Image 1 (tube, one colour):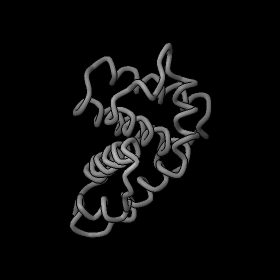
Image 2 (cartoon, rainbow, N blue to C red):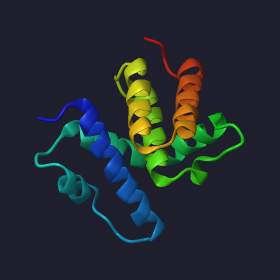
Image 3 (cartoon, rainbow, N blue to C red):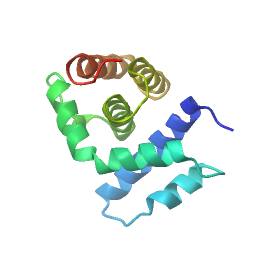
Image 4 (tube, rainbow, N blue to C red):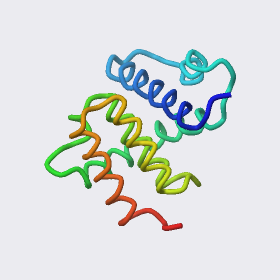
Length: 135
């Protein structure tokens, strides 16, 4: 059984794939993409991936509001997936805010450079203080 951090990493990979497929206008099946990454079905991954996809416009709009002199569309697809997941977890799930932020930062440390990690941390921190309901 995978832990939540590993499941978030899988979710990020699926969102990355979907992002590429959306750009190429190729049809895709979200469930099939998730199944490619996971041996067994997982509600956490499914709800995270579908939640991010369904709210992507809102998440991107919010990210753009908080990114300084930057836009989410200019980030690479991995960073976009991490930032969208972080914002989604902060605002739409029961995940404690500190956990949502830390998990996004840890993924970013693994897949991005330090500047991007700091940017993601800053955006999520400001969204937490301005938008998220405090625990």
